[in-house]
Image: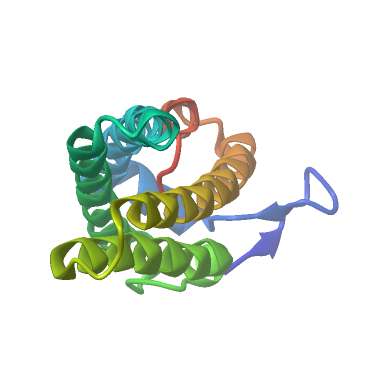
Length: 173
């Protein structure tokens, strides 16, 4: 439940004291803090591979493998993030505090999954696949920005070391 913080009028608090305690005590917070920067690194390297392929026509295999690696990190962070959300908020997805982040996460997952399906079924040309990956990555960047904003609020609320680590590493729950 989001509640108003009394020390900073007009700023919504993300966690109740009990949720903060569960967040700081669960191993899933650390898992998210590790997976988030790895996913971001995979994203950055993959984006470079995709751009190289689109500009030169070379490196399709490397770009494809890089998208699949990025997608594997996405699936891992989404599954562990749902577990984290269950531990902290009592539901696997769409807890009030992270509702819109989860909605956009579903779009991100759908686009990445569409890429995998299109690749496996050979239903798109290599260039079209790369543009689909770009669309998935744009959605990922939007989602990353949502989580970074939310965690900056969470960090300001508690100042915990875990929040600081999560903020420095990219998208996590």
